[in-house]
Length: 55
Length: 389
Image (tube, rainbow over all chains, first blue to last red; front, side):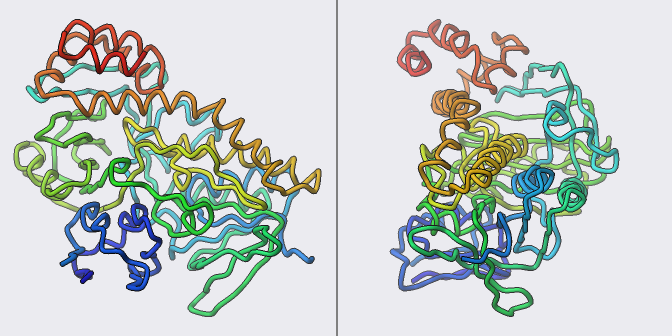
Protein backbone atom coordinates (compact mmCIF):
# COMPACT_ATOMS: atom_id res chain seq x y z
CA UNK A 1 0.00 0.00 0.00
CA UNK A 2 1.56 3.30 -1.21
CA UNK A 3 0.57 6.53 0.54
CA UNK A 4 1.70 10.12 0.62
CA UNK A 5 1.27 12.80 3.27
CA UNK A 6 0.40 15.83 1.13
CA UNK A 7 0.98 18.20 4.05
CA UNK A 8 4.60 17.07 4.30
CA UNK A 9 5.28 16.65 0.57
CA UNK A 10 7.33 19.50 -0.96
CA UNK A 11 6.53 18.35 -4.53
CA UNK A 12 10.27 18.27 -5.25
CA UNK A 13 10.04 15.25 -7.54
CA UNK A 14 12.94 13.37 -5.91
CA UNK A 15 10.73 10.29 -5.81
CA UNK A 16 10.04 10.62 -9.55
CA UNK A 17 13.76 10.65 -10.38
CA UNK A 18 14.41 7.30 -8.64
CA UNK A 19 11.28 5.38 -9.68
CA UNK A 20 12.45 2.43 -11.78
CA UNK A 21 8.96 1.87 -13.23
CA UNK A 22 7.80 5.33 -14.23
CA UNK A 23 4.95 4.99 -11.74
CA UNK A 24 5.36 8.53 -10.40
CA UNK A 25 4.89 11.88 -12.06
CA UNK A 26 5.19 15.47 -10.85
CA UNK A 27 2.40 17.73 -12.05
CA UNK A 28 1.07 20.25 -9.51
CA UNK A 29 1.56 17.48 -7.00
CA UNK A 30 2.93 13.94 -7.09
CA UNK A 31 0.76 11.51 -9.06
CA UNK A 32 1.09 7.79 -8.35
CA UNK A 33 0.09 5.03 -10.79
CA UNK A 34 -0.92 2.01 -8.76
CA UNK A 35 -0.86 -0.24 -11.80
CA UNK A 36 2.84 0.39 -12.53
CA UNK A 37 4.10 0.54 -8.92
CA UNK A 38 6.01 -2.50 -7.63
CA UNK A 39 6.25 -1.17 -4.02
CA UNK A 40 10.08 -1.21 -4.22
CA UNK A 41 10.37 1.64 -1.66
CA UNK A 42 12.87 3.66 -3.71
CA UNK A 43 10.58 6.69 -3.39
CA UNK A 44 10.07 6.18 0.34
CA UNK A 45 13.82 6.01 0.93
CA UNK A 46 14.64 9.02 -1.22
CA UNK A 47 12.04 11.45 0.12
CA UNK A 48 13.95 14.18 2.01
CA UNK A 49 11.01 14.86 4.35
CA UNK A 50 9.52 11.41 4.98
CA UNK A 51 6.25 12.10 3.15
CA UNK A 52 5.88 8.70 1.43
CA UNK A 53 4.93 5.48 3.24
CA UNK A 54 4.79 1.97 1.83
CA UNK A 55 3.22 -0.69 4.01
CA UNK B 1 4.79 16.79 -42.21
CA UNK B 2 4.16 20.30 -40.94
CA UNK B 3 6.13 21.48 -37.95
CA UNK B 4 5.24 24.49 -35.87
CA UNK B 5 8.82 24.90 -34.60
CA UNK B 6 12.29 23.69 -35.46
CA UNK B 7 12.88 22.79 -31.82
CA UNK B 8 10.68 22.33 -28.75
CA UNK B 9 12.51 22.35 -25.42
CA UNK B 10 10.86 20.95 -22.29
CA UNK B 11 12.10 22.73 -19.18
CA UNK B 12 13.11 26.37 -18.67
CA UNK B 13 15.98 25.86 -16.25
CA UNK B 14 19.51 26.88 -17.26
CA UNK B 15 19.87 23.94 -19.70
CA UNK B 16 16.61 24.68 -21.52
CA UNK B 17 16.93 28.44 -21.83
CA UNK B 18 20.66 28.42 -22.71
CA UNK B 19 20.00 25.85 -25.44
CA UNK B 20 17.07 27.98 -26.68
CA UNK B 21 19.16 31.15 -26.78
CA UNK B 22 21.91 29.55 -28.90
CA UNK B 23 19.43 28.09 -31.36
CA UNK B 24 17.36 31.26 -31.65
CA UNK B 25 20.51 33.33 -32.27
CA UNK B 26 21.19 31.14 -35.27
CA UNK B 27 17.75 31.87 -36.66
CA UNK B 28 15.94 28.66 -35.72
CA UNK B 29 12.40 28.76 -34.34
CA UNK B 30 12.34 27.55 -30.73
CA UNK B 31 9.66 27.09 -28.10
CA UNK B 32 10.39 26.38 -24.44
CA UNK B 33 7.72 24.94 -22.12
CA UNK B 34 7.95 24.80 -18.35
CA UNK B 35 5.67 23.05 -15.90
CA UNK B 36 6.11 25.66 -13.18
CA UNK B 37 4.06 28.82 -12.85
CA UNK B 38 7.17 30.93 -12.48
CA UNK B 39 10.64 30.21 -13.88
CA UNK B 40 13.23 29.62 -11.17
CA UNK B 41 10.70 28.83 -8.42
CA UNK B 42 10.83 26.95 -6.19
CA UNK B 43 14.60 27.00 -6.12
CA UNK B 44 16.21 23.61 -6.00
CA UNK B 45 19.76 24.20 -4.93
CA UNK B 46 22.43 25.98 -2.92
CA UNK B 47 22.84 28.55 -5.71
CA UNK B 48 26.66 28.46 -5.76
CA UNK B 49 28.68 28.66 -8.99
CA UNK B 50 32.28 29.38 -9.91
CA UNK B 51 32.93 32.61 -11.75
CA UNK B 52 34.00 30.53 -14.77
CA UNK B 53 30.31 30.39 -15.63
CA UNK B 54 30.67 33.86 -17.17
CA UNK B 55 32.89 32.35 -19.86
CA UNK B 56 29.83 30.36 -20.93
CA UNK B 57 27.03 32.92 -20.70
CA UNK B 58 28.69 36.34 -20.50
CA UNK B 59 28.44 38.87 -17.71
CA UNK B 60 25.78 38.06 -15.12
CA UNK B 61 23.76 41.13 -14.08
CA UNK B 62 24.34 42.28 -10.49
CA UNK B 63 20.70 41.68 -9.60
CA UNK B 64 21.26 37.92 -10.05
CA UNK B 65 24.15 37.83 -7.56
CA UNK B 66 23.49 37.58 -3.82
CA UNK B 67 27.11 37.23 -2.75
CA UNK B 68 30.61 37.04 -4.19
CA UNK B 69 32.86 34.40 -2.63
CA UNK B 70 36.61 33.77 -2.65
CA UNK B 71 36.42 30.00 -2.29
CA UNK B 72 35.40 27.13 -0.06
CA UNK B 73 36.17 25.99 3.47
CA UNK B 74 36.04 22.22 3.80
CA UNK B 75 35.46 21.08 7.40
CA UNK B 76 36.60 17.67 8.62
CA UNK B 77 34.41 15.78 11.12
CA UNK B 78 36.76 17.02 13.91
CA UNK B 79 36.01 20.65 12.98
CA UNK B 80 39.38 21.49 11.40
CA UNK B 81 39.08 23.01 7.97
CA UNK B 82 41.09 23.75 4.89
CA UNK B 83 40.51 26.83 2.82
CA UNK B 84 40.45 26.38 -0.95
CA UNK B 85 40.61 29.69 -2.79
CA UNK B 86 39.22 29.74 -6.34
CA UNK B 87 41.45 31.62 -8.85
CA UNK B 88 38.39 33.28 -10.32
CA UNK B 89 36.19 33.41 -7.22
CA UNK B 90 32.55 32.49 -7.34
CA UNK B 91 28.97 33.62 -6.85
CA UNK B 92 26.01 32.69 -4.75
CA UNK B 93 23.19 33.45 -7.14
CA UNK B 94 19.59 34.46 -6.61
CA UNK B 95 18.37 31.55 -8.73
CA UNK B 96 14.86 32.96 -9.10
CA UNK B 97 16.29 36.12 -10.65
CA UNK B 98 19.08 34.34 -12.53
CA UNK B 99 16.85 31.73 -14.19
CA UNK B 100 14.39 34.43 -15.25
CA UNK B 101 17.26 36.50 -16.67
CA UNK B 102 18.41 33.49 -18.72
CA UNK B 103 14.86 33.05 -20.00
CA UNK B 104 14.65 36.73 -20.95
CA UNK B 105 17.95 36.41 -22.82
CA UNK B 106 16.51 33.49 -24.79
CA UNK B 107 13.39 35.52 -25.57
CA UNK B 108 15.46 38.53 -26.68
CA UNK B 109 17.25 36.23 -29.12
CA UNK B 110 13.93 35.18 -30.61
CA UNK B 111 12.89 32.10 -28.63
CA UNK B 112 9.34 31.69 -27.32
CA UNK B 113 8.82 30.63 -23.72
CA UNK B 114 5.64 29.59 -21.89
CA UNK B 115 5.30 28.56 -18.24
CA UNK B 116 2.37 26.82 -16.54
CA UNK B 117 2.62 24.23 -19.34
CA UNK B 118 2.81 20.67 -18.09
CA UNK B 119 4.17 18.31 -20.75
CA UNK B 120 2.78 14.82 -20.16
CA UNK B 121 4.32 12.95 -23.09
CA UNK B 122 6.06 13.13 -26.44
CA UNK B 123 4.48 12.81 -29.85
CA UNK B 124 6.04 10.05 -31.92
CA UNK B 125 5.69 9.17 -35.58
CA UNK B 126 7.56 6.49 -37.53
CA UNK B 127 9.87 5.93 -34.59
CA UNK B 128 10.81 9.64 -34.44
CA UNK B 129 10.07 12.09 -31.64
CA UNK B 130 8.08 14.84 -33.37
CA UNK B 131 6.66 17.01 -30.60
CA UNK B 132 4.96 17.16 -27.23
CA UNK B 133 1.54 16.97 -25.67
CA UNK B 134 0.54 18.70 -22.50
CA UNK B 135 -1.80 21.06 -20.70
CA UNK B 136 -2.00 24.83 -20.37
CA UNK B 137 -4.47 26.01 -17.68
CA UNK B 138 -5.67 22.42 -17.69
CA UNK B 139 -6.54 22.58 -21.41
CA UNK B 140 -4.85 19.93 -23.54
CA UNK B 141 -2.56 20.94 -26.43
CA UNK B 142 -0.16 19.33 -28.87
CA UNK B 143 2.72 20.92 -30.72
CA UNK B 144 5.10 19.54 -33.31
CA UNK B 145 8.77 20.20 -33.91
CA UNK B 146 11.59 18.69 -35.93
CA UNK B 147 13.62 18.04 -32.79
CA UNK B 148 12.60 17.80 -29.12
CA UNK B 149 14.98 18.59 -26.25
CA UNK B 150 14.25 17.13 -22.82
CA UNK B 151 15.81 19.53 -20.28
CA UNK B 152 13.45 18.83 -17.43
CA UNK B 153 15.90 18.02 -14.68
CA UNK B 154 15.86 14.65 -12.93
CA UNK B 155 12.47 15.32 -11.32
CA UNK B 156 10.40 14.68 -14.45
CA UNK B 157 9.00 11.37 -15.65
CA UNK B 158 9.77 12.39 -19.25
CA UNK B 159 13.40 11.25 -19.23
CA UNK B 160 12.19 7.79 -18.32
CA UNK B 161 9.49 7.89 -21.01
CA UNK B 162 12.07 9.02 -23.60
CA UNK B 163 15.15 6.92 -22.93
CA UNK B 164 14.34 4.92 -19.82
CA UNK B 165 16.71 7.02 -17.68
CA UNK B 166 16.17 6.99 -13.92
CA UNK B 167 18.53 7.37 -10.95
CA UNK B 168 18.94 4.27 -8.81
CA UNK B 169 19.13 4.88 -5.05
CA UNK B 170 22.90 4.49 -4.91
CA UNK B 171 23.32 7.27 -7.48
CA UNK B 172 21.20 10.04 -5.99
CA UNK B 173 21.50 12.34 -3.01
CA UNK B 174 18.42 13.44 -1.13
CA UNK B 175 18.59 17.14 -0.24
CA UNK B 176 16.88 19.63 2.03
CA UNK B 177 17.77 23.27 2.51
CA UNK B 178 16.58 26.12 4.68
CA UNK B 179 17.29 29.65 3.57
CA UNK B 180 18.02 31.28 6.92
CA UNK B 181 18.16 34.87 8.07
CA UNK B 182 19.55 36.26 11.34
CA UNK B 183 22.51 33.88 11.34
CA UNK B 184 26.26 34.60 11.42
CA UNK B 185 28.69 33.35 8.81
CA UNK B 186 31.95 34.27 7.10
CA UNK B 187 30.46 35.42 3.83
CA UNK B 188 33.74 35.27 1.87
CA UNK B 189 33.48 31.47 1.69
CA UNK B 190 31.06 28.66 1.14
CA UNK B 191 31.26 26.23 4.05
CA UNK B 192 31.20 22.48 3.43
CA UNK B 193 30.97 20.00 6.35
CA UNK B 194 31.99 16.37 5.85
CA UNK B 195 31.38 13.39 8.10
CA UNK B 196 29.58 10.08 8.26
CA UNK B 197 27.48 11.29 11.19
CA UNK B 198 26.97 14.74 9.67
CA UNK B 199 25.86 13.65 6.19
CA UNK B 200 26.43 10.05 5.03
CA UNK B 201 28.09 10.20 1.59
CA UNK B 202 27.12 13.86 1.08
CA UNK B 203 27.77 17.03 3.05
CA UNK B 204 26.13 19.87 4.92
CA UNK B 205 26.58 23.33 3.48
CA UNK B 206 26.31 26.98 4.40
CA UNK B 207 26.26 29.15 1.28
CA UNK B 208 26.20 32.80 2.39
CA UNK B 209 23.90 35.42 0.90
CA UNK B 210 25.24 38.32 2.94
CA UNK B 211 26.67 38.20 6.47
CA UNK B 212 23.44 37.27 8.20
CA UNK B 213 21.68 35.17 5.56
CA UNK B 214 22.57 31.83 3.95
CA UNK B 215 21.35 28.70 2.26
CA UNK B 216 21.87 26.03 4.90
CA UNK B 217 21.39 22.56 3.51
CA UNK B 218 22.26 18.90 3.39
CA UNK B 219 22.55 16.21 0.74
CA UNK B 220 22.71 12.56 1.84
CA UNK B 221 22.52 9.09 0.45
CA UNK B 222 18.92 7.85 0.79
CA UNK B 223 18.60 5.80 3.96
CA UNK B 224 16.67 5.24 7.14
CA UNK B 225 17.28 8.75 8.46
CA UNK B 226 16.03 11.47 6.14
CA UNK B 227 17.71 14.64 4.91
CA UNK B 228 15.53 16.60 7.33
CA UNK B 229 16.93 14.70 10.31
CA UNK B 230 20.53 15.53 9.34
CA UNK B 231 19.76 19.17 8.55
CA UNK B 232 18.08 19.81 11.88
CA UNK B 233 20.84 18.01 13.76
CA UNK B 234 23.42 20.15 11.93
CA UNK B 235 21.66 23.43 12.71
CA UNK B 236 21.17 22.42 16.36
CA UNK B 237 24.90 21.84 16.74
CA UNK B 238 25.82 25.27 15.31
CA UNK B 239 24.72 28.12 17.64
CA UNK B 240 25.54 30.72 14.95
CA UNK B 241 22.85 29.07 12.77
CA UNK B 242 20.46 27.94 15.47
CA UNK B 243 19.70 31.53 16.49
CA UNK B 244 18.43 32.34 12.97
CA UNK B 245 15.04 32.05 11.28
CA UNK B 246 13.88 29.90 8.39
CA UNK B 247 12.64 32.13 5.56
CA UNK B 248 12.38 29.48 2.85
CA UNK B 249 12.42 25.67 2.63
CA UNK B 250 13.72 23.86 -0.46
CA UNK B 251 13.75 20.14 -1.18
CA UNK B 252 15.16 18.15 -4.06
CA UNK B 253 17.27 15.24 -5.15
CA UNK B 254 20.42 15.38 -7.22
CA UNK B 255 21.98 12.65 -9.36
CA UNK B 256 25.57 11.92 -8.32
CA UNK B 257 26.52 9.55 -11.10
CA UNK B 258 25.06 7.21 -13.68
CA UNK B 259 26.21 9.22 -16.69
CA UNK B 260 24.35 7.64 -19.62
CA UNK B 261 26.38 6.50 -22.64
CA UNK B 262 23.47 7.54 -24.82
CA UNK B 263 21.26 10.62 -24.41
CA UNK B 264 19.70 10.78 -27.89
CA UNK B 265 17.09 9.12 -30.05
CA UNK B 266 15.52 9.89 -33.44
CA UNK B 267 14.46 13.53 -33.10
CA UNK B 268 15.39 13.80 -29.41
CA UNK B 269 18.23 14.97 -27.17
CA UNK B 270 18.24 14.84 -23.36
CA UNK B 271 20.58 17.34 -21.73
CA UNK B 272 21.43 18.88 -18.37
CA UNK B 273 20.39 17.25 -15.10
CA UNK B 274 17.78 15.13 -16.92
CA UNK B 275 20.79 13.30 -18.44
CA UNK B 276 22.52 13.21 -15.02
CA UNK B 277 25.00 15.78 -16.33
CA UNK B 278 25.89 16.92 -12.82
CA UNK B 279 29.21 16.99 -10.96
CA UNK B 280 29.06 13.71 -8.97
CA UNK B 281 31.12 14.87 -5.98
CA UNK B 282 29.54 18.19 -5.08
CA UNK B 283 26.25 17.88 -6.94
CA UNK B 284 26.73 21.21 -8.73
CA UNK B 285 24.59 21.22 -11.84
CA UNK B 286 24.30 24.76 -13.21
CA UNK B 287 27.56 24.95 -15.18
CA UNK B 288 27.29 21.34 -16.33
CA UNK B 289 23.74 21.96 -17.52
CA UNK B 290 24.83 24.97 -19.55
CA UNK B 291 27.80 23.17 -21.15
CA UNK B 292 25.58 20.18 -21.96
CA UNK B 293 22.91 22.45 -23.47
CA UNK B 294 25.45 24.31 -25.60
CA UNK B 295 26.76 21.02 -27.00
CA UNK B 296 23.15 20.04 -27.73
CA UNK B 297 22.49 23.38 -29.49
CA UNK B 298 25.56 22.94 -31.71
CA UNK B 299 24.53 19.44 -32.80
CA UNK B 300 20.90 20.46 -33.31
CA UNK B 301 21.94 23.42 -35.48
CA UNK B 302 23.95 21.09 -37.67
CA UNK B 303 21.11 18.56 -37.79
CA UNK B 304 18.64 21.24 -38.88
CA UNK B 305 20.98 22.50 -41.60
CA UNK B 306 21.40 18.97 -42.94
CA UNK B 307 17.75 18.07 -42.38
CA UNK B 308 18.92 14.92 -40.59
CA UNK B 309 17.32 14.29 -37.18
CA UNK B 310 18.23 10.62 -36.96
CA UNK B 311 19.65 9.05 -33.83
CA UNK B 312 22.76 8.24 -35.87
CA UNK B 313 23.44 11.91 -36.55
CA UNK B 314 22.35 13.22 -33.13
CA UNK B 315 24.63 10.68 -31.44
CA UNK B 316 27.40 13.19 -32.15
CA UNK B 317 26.01 14.79 -28.99
CA UNK B 318 27.16 11.73 -27.01
CA UNK B 319 30.61 11.76 -28.62
CA UNK B 320 31.26 15.45 -28.05
CA UNK B 321 29.78 15.60 -24.54
CA UNK B 322 31.77 12.58 -23.38
CA UNK B 323 34.97 14.01 -24.85
CA UNK B 324 34.33 17.45 -23.38
CA UNK B 325 32.81 16.60 -19.97
CA UNK B 326 31.92 12.93 -19.55
CA UNK B 327 35.44 11.61 -19.28
CA UNK B 328 36.22 14.11 -16.50
CA UNK B 329 32.94 13.63 -14.65
CA UNK B 330 33.44 9.87 -14.78
CA UNK B 331 36.75 10.38 -12.94
CA UNK B 332 34.99 12.59 -10.40
CA UNK B 333 32.41 9.84 -9.95
CA UNK B 334 35.23 7.38 -9.17
CA UNK B 335 36.60 9.83 -6.62
CA UNK B 336 33.14 10.08 -5.04
CA UNK B 337 32.96 6.29 -4.87
CA UNK B 338 36.22 6.34 -2.90
CA UNK B 339 35.40 9.30 -0.64
CA UNK B 340 32.08 7.79 0.43
CA UNK B 341 33.93 4.76 1.82
CA UNK B 342 36.24 6.82 4.06
CA UNK B 343 35.81 6.80 7.82
CA UNK B 344 35.63 10.01 9.84
CA UNK B 345 39.23 9.44 10.93
CA UNK B 346 40.31 9.15 7.30
CA UNK B 347 38.47 12.37 6.49
CA UNK B 348 40.19 14.12 9.41
CA UNK B 349 43.56 12.95 8.09
CA UNK B 350 42.76 14.18 4.61
CA UNK B 351 41.78 17.65 5.59
CA UNK B 352 45.09 17.73 7.49
CA UNK B 353 47.36 16.63 4.65
CA UNK B 354 45.71 17.74 1.41
CA UNK B 355 46.76 20.99 -0.22
CA UNK B 356 43.88 23.46 -0.64
CA UNK B 357 44.55 23.89 -4.36
CA UNK B 358 44.38 20.13 -4.93
CA UNK B 359 40.81 19.96 -3.63
CA UNK B 360 39.60 22.18 -6.46
CA UNK B 361 41.48 20.07 -9.02
CA UNK B 362 39.95 16.87 -7.59
CA UNK B 363 36.42 18.18 -8.00
CA UNK B 364 37.27 18.83 -11.66
CA UNK B 365 38.51 15.29 -12.20
CA UNK B 366 42.20 16.12 -12.42
CA UNK B 367 45.22 15.24 -10.25
CA UNK B 368 43.45 12.16 -8.90
CA UNK B 369 46.83 10.40 -8.75
CA UNK B 370 47.79 12.93 -6.04
CA UNK B 371 44.74 11.86 -4.05
CA UNK B 372 45.62 8.20 -4.63
CA UNK B 373 49.16 8.77 -3.32
CA UNK B 374 47.78 10.22 -0.09
CA UNK B 375 45.51 7.17 0.27
CA UNK B 376 48.44 4.83 -0.32
CA UNK B 377 50.10 6.06 2.89
CA UNK B 378 47.60 4.01 4.84
CA UNK B 379 47.79 0.26 4.17
CA UNK B 380 44.06 -0.13 4.80
CA UNK B 381 43.29 2.33 1.99
CA UNK B 382 45.54 0.93 -0.74
CA UNK B 383 42.72 -0.97 -2.41
CA UNK B 384 40.61 2.20 -2.51
CA UNK B 385 43.54 4.12 -3.98
CA UNK B 386 43.82 1.61 -6.82
CA UNK B 387 40.26 2.44 -7.80
CA UNK B 388 41.48 5.91 -8.81
CA UNK B 389 44.44 4.80 -10.93
